[in-house]
Amino acid sequence: MKMDPRLCWLPFMGPACEASDPFAMAQAELALGLASLEGVQARVSLLPGRGDGYEIKKEQDTYLVQGGEKGALYGVYHLLLSLHAGECPLTKWNEPAFPLRMLNHWDNMTGKVERGYAGDSFFYQDNRFDYDPARIRQYGRMLASVGINAISINNVNVHAPADRLVTDQLLPEVKKIADILRPFGVRLIIAVDYALPVTMGLKTADPLDPAVQAFWKKQCDEIYACVPDLLGFLVKADSEFRPGPYMYKRDHAQGANMLARALKPHRGMLIWRCFVYNCRQDWRDHSIDRPKAAYENYAWLDGQFDDNVILQVKNGPYDFQVREPVSPLFYAMEKTEKAIEFQLAQEYTGHQIDLYYMAPMWKEVMDDLRVMPKHICAVTNLGRDENWTGHHLAQANLYAYGRLCWLGREMDGKGEARRWIALTFGQHFPEADRLLSMLMDSREIYEKYNAPLGLCWMVTPHTHYGPDPEGYEFALWGTFHRANHQAVGIDRTEKGTGYACQYPEDMAKMYQDTDTCPEKLLLFFHRLRYDFKMKDGRTLLQRIYDDHFEGAQGAERLLSDWEKMQPHLPEAIYAHSLDRFRRQVKNAHDWRDIINTYFYRFTGIADEKGRKIYD
Image 1 (cartoon, rainbow, N blue to C red):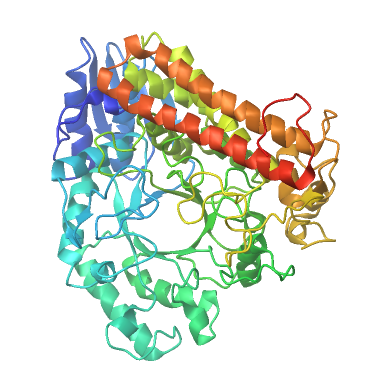
Image 2 (tube, rainbow, N blue to C red; image 1 turned 30 degrees about the vertical axis):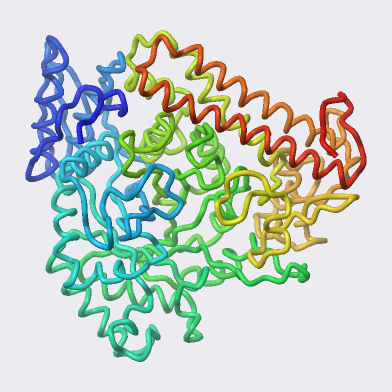
């Protein structure tokens, strides 16, 4: 596939190089990149044993990139990207905030991607590996250019034949992908089916059964003989009908440690997802509160996991909603390694149709964390579409995520958006300021017409795009808002479900008081009457009306701004995204009209400003 450089933040590159290791790749990419920079001289040197770090200095007229084997490659990309963005590339010793910087692919071997909004998988089709090696190399280059160093290559909901990726049936194909990505410093993770021993002929997958332990030891020996640098396994267990140790009355430390011990002789890691909750909840039972689940399942197990186990925890306690508080599990389990999990795929934030730049959300989460988890991961927003991410502007999220992986709390979302624009559209792009404003405004616009004040789950079931205020209200998934004619929201204080009490004492106190609870999370933590007075004097109901009207106007403004940029954009890029912005406007109008009408029918209270609400 011929890649248009305007579709990627790597405008200086031709076909990705083939090299034997990251340092050789650094040398080859430097030579290729310099060819597009008139008069620039640079060289790269290896500092053995220095890992992922690098520094860049200047000796007379020549830039010198120094770093460890992978660090030298990251340094080369930093040099080239900085020069193309019109920035000074010089830097003192520079190391990533997170040692493990992962992307999770939710790709099925059918070729379909669960929650994929950018086309089919570029690894698989028709239950077999089917890919363009040149595209995989280009992918490896994109990852390395922002410092991402690991990917899981299949869906955490493991469906046949992907369960055989860890067997000799498919391992040779896994090896080919690993070989392509290795020179870019990217290691593979495989999502495994906890019940594989049963599938392969045993009568049980009980983690304490010696036969099960022997099975996984043998499998790991075979796996690492084929792919010696496999990072390890990713497991989703006992959640949403996936098998796990609870089936055998074992806890998750017992289940995880069994796999971790099979991996440990090969220096493999086990990444264990904490997305475990009751997905058969009776809406009539108010004693169960889904956001409490991760803490209840794991906090008491602190210190019981082996040292090569990483608990992968979603950034919020629900499921990648538009706004959630930080999961309380991050404030617990001091003796256990954790990874924070974000979602690039816009499952609840617009499906890569509606514009939603995520970096400001991530920065808020990072600022709220008291102790930074050691690792980071995100569900990808990638697919086989030529522009990689469905919406051209959704590439800004992939780029910014890589920068978050490297910079952690120090990431400036606005600065990275500005840099992405310069790299993608050119440092002299005349509409840079307008496009920057669109990206930075997009989250608030989407939140206002979709789910203001922490009000979750009013989405269309299954697809999760478009409004359905009671789509999940009486379902089994435990996603309720309990709106009636008087009030909306769930009381999560100590007088209600007690969820707020899972936080440290000072945070719990803040969340439980409506005067100190962050206003944008009020309906996450409190059940409030529609006449509740907000800090600005408006009633809660009027605030809901205003936000939905303002959000729809914001979507209209995004469309108008994009139309003004037409003379400065390639026609194909302009036309493709124009269609997306038009669809976003329709979606915003639907949210405005359906949600406002929903609450108007409950209350009979009209909008104070006389705007149209349907009855």
